[in-house]
Image 1 (cartoon, rainbow, N blue to C red):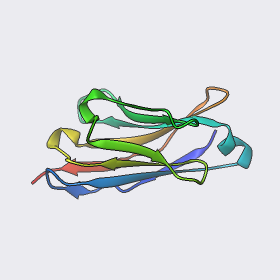
Image 2: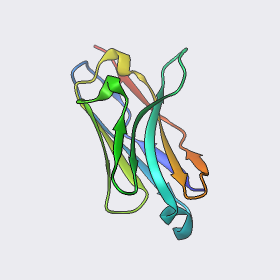
Image 3: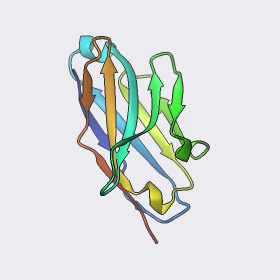
Image 4: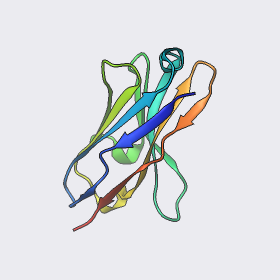
Length: 119
């Protein structure tokens, strides 16, 4: 397993943008074993939900609620993903968690970063 650190959460007005980053650390073997990375979010009183994911082959998937507004991408450096969030709305307010899955289907989670959309 790897350790994941998220950053980029902030308070933003409706219609604004944010870019979240997630960096994996650990042994070179564990980082190169990652096959999928993604972002989940959890709002107060709600279940954690998948927002977006990207495979090692750059196949992406998105929740219907964020399609056309959010974009997930990977850096050239292995184990780094970004989530570009545009046209943010109050319903996007949540703690955003980075998730990684490796070839052994082991899952790692970050500590989360708070995104608040409010005027």
